[in-house]
Image (cartoon, rainbow, N blue to C red; front, side, top):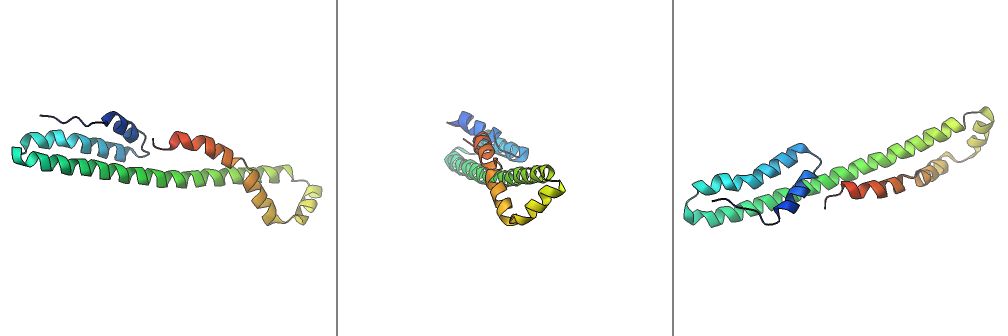
Length: 136
């Protein structure tokens, strides 16, 4: 006797999109585990085993999805900061003459940094990259 998980194709697709290979392997093993345990479980214990297995698979998948999204948020923040820094570095390279530096000294540095964060384009990049990384 084997168990075919209803909706397994969608679940396997979600699992294959997880960031860490260890999560993918762990979830696939958990899904397959029922077919190892079910044949050696007494008839009266099979229903309970299947219920516990379903809960275990769902709980583990939800945990991995939450961790995936947490890591994704961290990585998007790092991407945004890297884009912002690149924009600041490019601006400094373009403004390296003494004449420009003098003018630049008059500009409030904090205001310029905030403006560069807004105008760096990170929001556009992240908006277009994030949908490909989120779990379906």
